[in-house]
Image 1 (tube, helix red, strand yellow):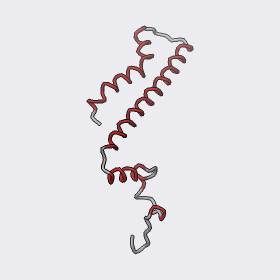
Image 2 (cartoon, one colour):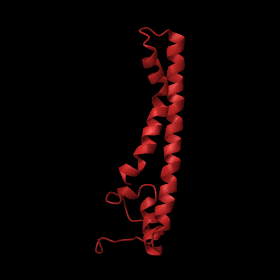
Image 3 (cartoon, rainbow, N blue to C red):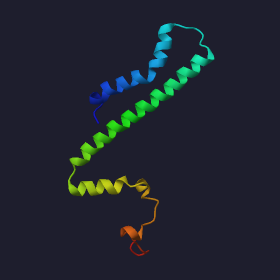
Length: 107
């Protein structure tokens, strides 16, 4: 993914996530009471969750668009690599259910 394409969206998400803190800085308050501090912390958590979910939606759309451009063979390879645990192929045993059985001689 090209950072120059996504930089505007990332900047908007950053502004959204840090809006409560920016507001406190703009107010120039030296001390914050406990209730307001708690409210700001909760708002930050909520904003962060919204930003993360929005970003995941964008990434899913980009993934779908990229997968749509793949050939049939590439799609099959991508699906195989996308299975949970597929990154541990060096330490795992071949599974007969997937047609990967090796004996000592074949290994």
